[in-house]
Length: 315
Image (cartoon, rainbow, N blue to C red; front, top):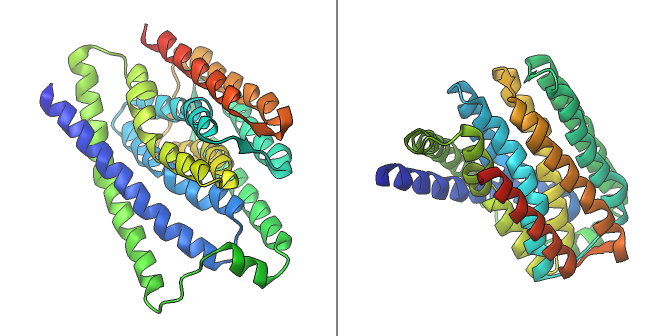
């Protein structure tokens, strides 16, 4: 029991460290391509902070634990919009830009609805995984092109970003990405193995482990990134990271995983957890519309919703 907990904690620590390295390297390279902070939050940072979920979901599905894979993604999305957004908005009110209302939230809700419609047949296969990836590619291309079009002058870009100028920076960025990827791989090995053994010893359903332990653990990068961004008043990055992470969780993680191996979906996840995910995503919209910000009171509401959801899952 103690050994499994140590393996679980070690794997989580390596996962988070790996995700941090990956975000640092990828974000720096993205900024070289003259992308705005909102787009970096929606794409590179979101994908980097979602990378632990990706590795864990693939390994869980291949190991014959589909409830761990699906529960991890659904639980992580709920955690992002309830726990993480709640904490970030309590630290500092998060102001909402028009693009978040017109593009990011509809894409987040649309991805969640698409997942719900697809999993009603009880599985996600490779064809549906390819559909997810194609939708993601179209979305990323659209927001990147829109961002570059909105950037008025190179002077504005230079003021907004502190771009690296040393000749070795690109090599350093690539080193971060390589180290981050290695950390994600080995961290996931230990984390998933520890979670499976832990569940077996305690006789707990894999779905519960996926939604609680794995989802909370793999959402720590989003929690750290969004909390720091909120503290620094970089609300575009905070909100963009969470919306983008949820989009990436569904379209890229489940997309890639289902292409590699078919993902079976249990009735409990279909009829309970995905409904919660849809409900929380829907609740976020009026909070964003009120005064065009997610304030501290809204954050408390989201935290209470998350606490109640965790109570229903565990008990």
